[in-house]
Structures are given as structure tokens and as C-alpha cells.
Figure 1 (cartoon, chains in turn green, cyan):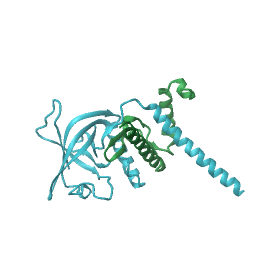
Figure 2 (tube, one colour; figure 1 turned 180 degrees about the vertical axis):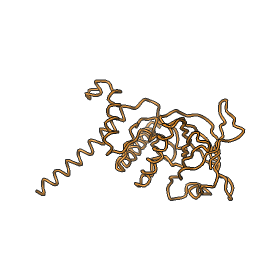
Figure 3 (cartoon, chains in turn green, yellow; figure 1 turned 90 degrees about the vertical axis):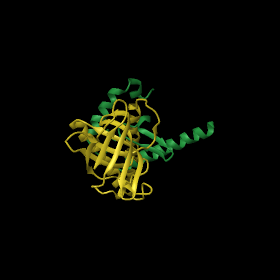
Figure 4 (tube, one colour; figure 1 turned 120 degrees about the vertical axis):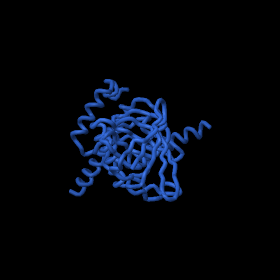
Length: 82
Length: 175
């Protein structure tokens, strides 16, 4: 049971990353990837809520998003030590 | 046209709110529903959605879970759906942008792993807007995820950098 559960988690993670990669390749950044925005069902994984998304070539939004996210991080996270 | 009933908590709508379809469904080419394919619904066909619970709040409004009942000449089809309702002007614009993002992703061939949008609707009396999507399961969690968004950004930037480096190397070799 433990094996199948971790195997399923691995499959879900892989499916989520594959979807995220195809979204990025289309030139969109989701901007709010977190467990609550990843749904799982018998049909597989679905990434939802594109309300924070923006085009990867949109420099103005990109800078705003960076500033917003930097404010939310603790210093150790910013330096990469946590 | 979309008829929306609220049937949860203190709500029990005797009459529905009426929404007009502003944008079409964004679905895969293959049949979505059995026996009737919802992609073949025309603007004048009516959809009835009963909202059964509120499942969250987002930047673009309030998210509900509900059941869609699509009436047509072949009978009716039931489908689990999620409806995002945006109330103020800012939220409505953001919800429309979200619809456009789904539309753009679909046009770029991204279908698997993103929500199936059944339509974007505006209230007939200039009230809220509604984004109707197929229900896609339960979320993996509810933890705040700002860090993972930074992670997404970093992964993307690293990928771009490595692609640029690769191109740079190829160009340098040619020279």
C-alpha cells in the first residue's frame, strides 16, 4: 500500500511537472503554483487558477511579480540557505 | 444562456440568475460528454447549473462547486462543474483574462492537465461574470505556496539561461 501510494505521488508529480513544462513552452507563467492549485482525480492531474498568470515575455508584469514574491520570502529563503 | 441556481447554506433560489454566453467553450476536439458532446452546444442552447457549495475565494472571485444540467433535444446531461463568479469590475476583467489564458493555451496545443472550460458568461443585468469549468478533482493541499511560485520562476529562468548558453555555444562553434 505504501509503495503504491508513493508510486502514485511520483506519477502525480511527474504529470504536474509535464503540464507545467508545456504551459511554460507556450509562453505562460502560472505565477501561483502550490498544492491547492493542483487537482487530482481518476483522470489525472489538473493545474487550475491562472488568475496570476502572465506571458513570460511580459517584462513589466514579471518585475512586479518578482517584487511581490520577494516580499513574501524570508531572508534565508532568498539567500538559498533554507 | 446559463441559468444559475444557488442551493447551499441559507440559499435556495426559487428562480435562477440568467447569464448570457460571452465566450465559447474551450474543449478538446474529441467528444467530451456521453451521449451528447457539449462542444456542439450553440449559443442559444441553455445550460442550467445548480451551485451546491462554496469551495474557495480567489483573486478573481468566489469559486463554487455545482452540477450542470444541459437540456437538448436528446435529453439532458449531468456534469460536475466548478463555477467562478466575479463580482466587481476588477474581478470581472481578471476572470476574462483567465479565460483568455485558457484559450491561448488551448490554441498552443496545451490541453492535457489544464481545466476544461465550458464557457464564459456575463449576467444579463450587468452583474457578475461566470467562468464555468469541468470539475477536476480535489486539491493536493491548501498550504501557502509563494515559495513554489518563486521556484517556478527560477526553473523557467534557469531553463532559458541554459537554452541561451546552448545557443551561444553553438554559434561560437560555428564562428
